[in-house]
Image (cartoon, rainbow, N blue to C red; front, side, top):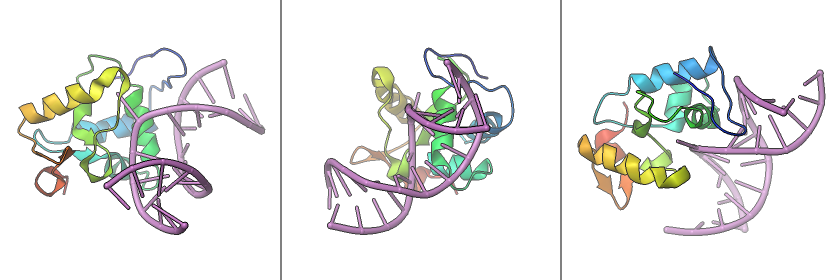
Length: 111
DNA sequence: GCGGTGACGGTCG
DNA sequence: CCGACCGCCACCG
């Protein structure tokens, strides 16, 4: 998992990113995790940005369920190319409910 | 090896 | 509820 992206996209073939990806990969279908939770589970309790950065580096078409990672409070972070729309669509497709434009973490949050 | 940077987040006004 | 301000960390040039 991982690929180069245009510009200043980070690219690492082991360690930190892989740990982030490993965590994201085990988010069950129909459930979501916040960037902070993902980072924490990967061993970086105070580096939510790291999770964001790692996901940002994902190549298009990755098999990783990146759409299950949302911002604090269940918000969808604006993504390039309005990718947030795709994310919402995918989540809805797996039965994730939204409340006032945000994922209902009470029902779909990680535990 | 230094410095800028980025799909974040909690706090404060 | 919204915007601004740090803090945090690995990655790239």
